[in-house]
Image 1 (cartoon, rainbow, N blue to C red):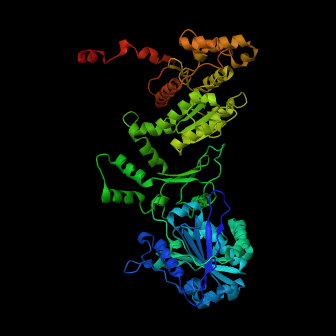
Image 2 (cartoon, rainbow, N blue to C red):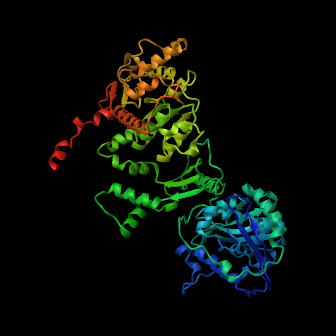
Image 3 (tube, rainbow, N blue to C red):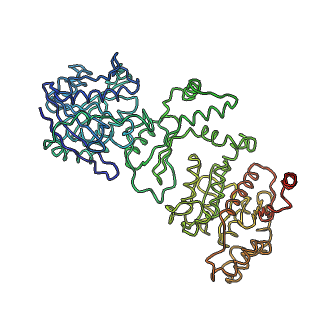
Length: 631
């Protein structure tokens, strides 16, 4: 008997599925071996490397021989028309209702009572089952798409209700719940063959299909096109499979869809702990939303590193390391351990250790320079950073070193091409706010940070919000902005609150420290601006403002190159010169000073120069004597 089929494609522009449909003969005839190959495909996926041993016989063959396959509709999915099969689902019609799995599971009497309670006859009841997807295709949204195809077909064929059995261990029942299926009370019990608890699910077609109502409606409308025409019987090669490889996420939620255009504004990651039901549901919905572009899972390697950090005198390997990892997991599946972090601006979904363990491993090599109690103390502090061009280097270095666990970032400006000589960013960041870029970079270092941003920058109206915030006041200010008003007003506010201020000028390695926490009456900028207040600045002329900036940075101590540049700004130069190496050094100096201040180490107010032009000089060369001996 000829098997009719026609390909249909997913209209998602990023992921296309080619689905072939056929209805197997009711007689049980299988002249082409198509049904048998589908049964083998299903059994191999369900066997899942031994998780469900009932789908493999003593001879090692994968077996899922069911009479219910004959007379049922079968939907087979590929990425390309001639590609291997990546997924499959079955839809059984009332013609084979006496063979339904749900009927056998409930027993004749309870099954009939259930249909009667729903006001549905056997001729209006369809069963869908055996949704299987190759592991690598689960991350491309195929499970949800195939489910919609089968449900849409049932709607078209006149189903009043749909019924089926569903596993519960991996949240399959919750996955079907998003299509409008609900569990039948009192039907959940353990089934040996599936090695998990199974429940009966029910779907009323009149109620729509939950979150997927639109997609199911589209599949319902396209079902006639899917089954029309005569494209011949697929050959045996069409049922080849995608071999295992790549990321293994055995028990991960249903799927991953290729993402749309990266987010230009988002800066906050989404943290999901799948051991919590709400987060599991959110994770599954995210994976099926079309917004995730890549999954990165190195949790096993992270666990191994965690064990090495805790027991550095041991070198676990092989089976012994696996045993230690299992002990750490304590019965939790590896995929569900810790957090999954979704970065909406890149579409990446990354698996990381729980907060405390993540930070223990990430900062393990800080020890002896920063001890564990000190590390924990630093993570309890909140740092405010104003000006995120030069300040970006400080912010990222603070995050790298674990100096501060909470940050408040302020900058009104967007990244321009000329900023990229000193601000570490990519061309895809052009036009993106500097505060947004900085927050993203810091969250990609430590997704557990607490970060707030102010994209309007620091102004008279936002000053109080910046220093106090909604959560807690800042403990330290890093000031790296260009505006004289902000430089003075921020210090006035910091002095009134007893907050220390650190500034890097990225010229000659100048580091400025004002310990208003220890010296509440200390003059601003070490007295270099006299009694001038921020409120006085609007009255100053342009020349007076230029003189003010020079007095702030100590005109007699700036480098000759910067001194020469001031006279050329607006004539041959668009702005004053800055180098990435100077900015990177400044980030290191700010971080070192902030760490000392927040830990209570000695770090006095003052202005300090770590001038490499001076320090990398012959008189400081400690290898001179050795060089002479070698010559």
